[in-house]
Amino acid sequence: MDRLSSTFSALADPTRRAILARLALGETSVNEIAKPFDMSLPAVSKHLKVLEGAGLISRGRDAQWRPCKLEAAPLQDAANWIEYYRKFWEASFDRLDAYLQRLQAGGDDGDGSKPKKPKTKGKSDGRK
Amino acid sequence: MAASETTAQEFTVTRTFNAPRDVVWKAWTERKALEEWWGPKGCAIEVEALDVSAGGTFHYSMGMPDGTKWWGIFHYEEVVKPERIVFVNSFSNEAGEIARAPFSDNWPKQIRNVVTFHDEGGKTRIELRGRPVNVSAEEQAMFESMFGSMQQGFGGTFDQLDDYLATQR
Image (tube, rainbow over all chains, first blue to last red):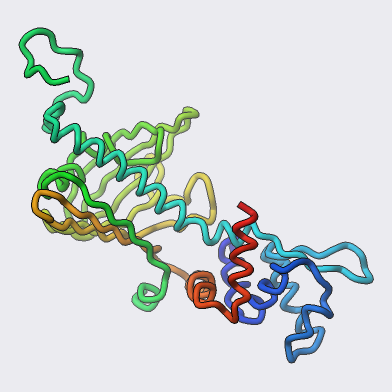
C-alpha cells in the first residue's frame, strides 16, 4: 500500500478521525485519548497503531507515558492535491487570458504565425 | 467506477474570458495556443502530439526551470465543438504511458476533467470540473472524511484539526 492509501484507510474509520481531532488540541496520553470512547484500552491502542503506521501520529519513546502527537504532513499531502490542481489551473487560465487579450489586440493572429516575430519595420499595422 | 464517481471529491474552476467562444475554443484545441498558455508556471511546453477528438491525445513535455523534463498526456473522451471537452489528464513518460506525478506519490494518477464553454455575448465563461479517476475505496473514504465530515463539523472538532493544519502551512 502506498502512503496515500495507508493515509486514506487510516482515516476511513470514524474513531480514528475523532482521535486525530483530539490530538489536534495537543499531544496527550493513551488513557486521555480513550476517555471519551466506550472502548477498551487495547482497542484504542489498536487504532493508534494504525494511525502510527500511516504516519499520522507519532508516539513518545518514554515507556511509561508514550504521549501521542499529531503529524500533519500526510494529512496535508492527502488533502493538498486539489489545492495544487486548482492553483495550477488558475495560473494557466491567467496565461490563457493574457493570450486571448493579445489575440484580440491583433498582435498575434493565432493562426500559426510565430509568437515572437522580429519587430516589423515600416509598413506594419502600427500596433505595439 | 460509477460509485466512486458520485462521491469522490470534485473541484471546480470557473473563469470568464473576454473573447468569443470560437476563439477560446481554438485556444484549447490548437497546438500553438496550447503552447502559449497550458502548463505549470515557468515551464516551456512542447507539443509532442495533438489530436483533439474523442479517443485522441495531447501528449506534451514540460521543460522545467531547473532543466528537467516532465511529460504529460490528455486522453480526450468527448469533444463537442464549441461547447464541451472531456479529457483525462495525467503525467506520463516520453512514450505517452501514464505515470505517477514526478513530484509526489500522492498526486492522483488520473484526473477526469469536464470543460464547458459558455457563450456570454462575446465573452466566454469556462467551467472546469475535475475529479480523480479510478478512486479506491480508501481514497473515497478519505475524500468523504476530509471534505465531508470535516466541513460539516464532525462535532466541531474537525474545525480544530483544520485550524491546526492551517498553522502547519
